[in-house]
Each structure stands twice: as C-alpha cells, then as structure tokens.
Length: 225
Ligand code: NI
Ligand code: MN
Image (cartoon, rainbow, N blue to C red; front, side, top):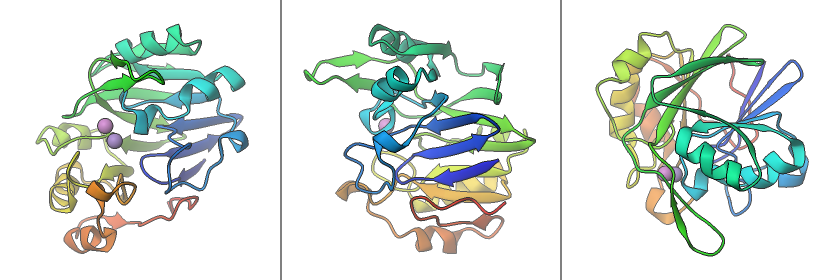
C-alpha cells in the first residue's frame, strides 16, 4: 500500500488496482501537488460537504466512474450531480473491494455551496477509519477535540491524519491532546497553511507530541510506515 499526503486534507491510498482519494480538493488548493487531470481514482471518500473537502469530486467521479463514499445526505446530493455514490452514517462500517470503511463522529458542520452560490445541506460531518492491508488509518476530517477520540483509538490506529489549523478545527494544542486520546503510531498534521485563518507551524505541533511519530509531510510525500 502507498499512503501519501497531498496538502490541506487530501490523502491518496494506492492498493492493488485501487486508488482511493480522501477529500480531493485539488482545484484552488495552493498546497497540493496534484493536478485534476493526473489523478484517476477508483474511489473517493469524503468527510463532509465543505467545498475544501468535496473539491473536484463531481468531475473526478464522472470522468473515472469512481464510487463516492460519503455520509448519506452528501452522497444523495452528489448523486443528483451525476456521481455514483454509496451513502453511510456515523458509526456505520462496510467492507468495500479495497478495504473496510467506518464513519466516526466529528464536531464541525457540513454544507456544500454550488457554482451558483446555492448552499446545500449535506448532513453530519464525519471522520473515517479505513482498514486496508492490515493498516488502520484515521482521517479526522474537520473537527474540534472530543474525548470519544479515545473510543476511536481503541480500534488500534496506525496512522492518524489530524487537522491542526485552528479557527475552523483543532489547533496544535488540542490536536496534541487528540494524539494522547487516539494513541496512534504515526501522526500526520493536515488542514493548515492553505488559507490565512489556518496558518500554523507544524513544528510547533510536533514539539507538543511525545507519544507518537509525527511526520510532517510535504504535498506528494509518502507516510513512512
Ligand atoms: Ni469543513
Ligand atoms: Mn475544511
């Protein structure tokens, strides 16, 4: 399995014949190394409806026939836009051909603004726990700190992608507390430096974490397992 980070909250997983993109915000993402024309996902996993997470999903799903896995209302909306989707709910898990996906809670909001500026309700925001080739990955999406992260950690997390940008999500201090709750082997900070309100120094976050291997990845770099 190849697990790589691509700026903001974009994560790519390559396993066997499958390419899974999480939150593929590529167009307008000044932090990413990806080009929309260069990626061909078989699956897209979305944490919530905000445009900096849905990103290029509709175009990618239509061009490549990728299955979009998202919370029920978001999946429903994307289905009306021509994407093939699979809707799920918080706490629900399912085995897909590439691996196992479970949706977790996140404390945030969720809506999608279309090209005409109309805002669509897209249900609950979420995090996702993916188990692929015996590696368990927690992508927290956008969230504040919550103590039930301990329950997510009890599932045994190898790699956690945690937002550290503050303002809209956890900042470095709360994200470091989250690491204590989750107890992952490896942590990758995300959702920072894309926009002025989320400017952060990931080294500051790293200095606050003592119980996990913090890997500060540049866009395009792979997690060192
Ligand atoms: Ni958001
Ligand atoms: Mn966001």
